[in-house]
Amino acid sequence: MRAVQALWRSRLREDRGGIAVYAAIVTIALLGIIGLALDGAGKLRATERADAVAMEAARAAGQAIDPTQAVTGNGLRADPEAAAAVARAYLARAGTQGSVSLSADGTQLTVTVSDTYATKFLSVAGINSMGVSGHGSARLLHGVTQPE
Image (cartoon, rainbow, N blue to C red; front, side, top):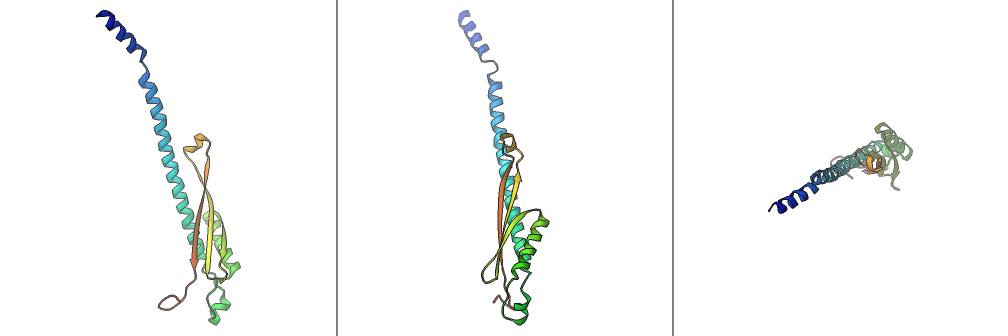
């Protein structure tokens, strides 16, 4: 009986520290998962901000209409140079960069924003930033009771 007890005691001594190694591995994996979730959420917020900035830049650019067309009643069109300048100024004030395009008929403005998200946890793995982009467009409408 004593031999069996001695055998069990020796085997129990061999397992000492096994829980500590397991806890360390699980803790590192859990921190990695939390880091991925937080950086993923941060990138999502940065993408939403880029979309919002692009939409607002497109709306701001839509205010730069061509006065010669509007005053004479020939139609509502954006002034290409003025609209692009307004959109770029809005993007600069927001601290982002992007591109502005105008449809052939001059009634739809599209803004694309390019930005980066600086990672918090993934920088440990060598990923310091992730690129994000946003898109927004605005269509020029006019009318008294409904868009024409």
